[in-house]
Image (cartoon, rainbow, N blue to C red):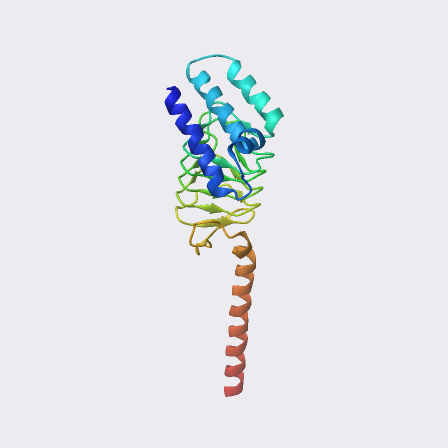
Length: 217
């Protein structure tokens, strides 16, 4: 079990090296990256909760939030190689399930929508990127290889291999990612603006058609 935990820690460090060019050495990652620290303490709290220990897991979560600004419920299920970049204000609810190779930026909320019991938080697939300030709420599923734009509010399922943006979130058919699979925030269109522009073109076409008919008369 110790060797398995050590392997996970090494993977977490490697993921930070690969995703953050500002990471210079291992000591800097261990002591200066709140996302790494929050994930490390969550794994401890999650294991203690699995063993049926009362109170201590929640207290670990509480202390972690004070130290790192990241709140992860001990019951949340988190896969391999999660990277929480910056991390301040990140909230991950009790029944959240996160897959492998997920990247989460600051101010992200994976939360519920009310006081219901049971599964009430989102399920995040593999290889998902969630932009800064995004809110994913309720018992919904975010498919594999999805990109969630910064500031989006997502309350419905999102199919795999797509990008979702806006408030509320709209699925963008185009995959605005570069060859490395990184979300290109500066190239994500506003779906509302796109729809308005589409309607403008339709109105212009109708006006031209009306003018042609009037000229024939």
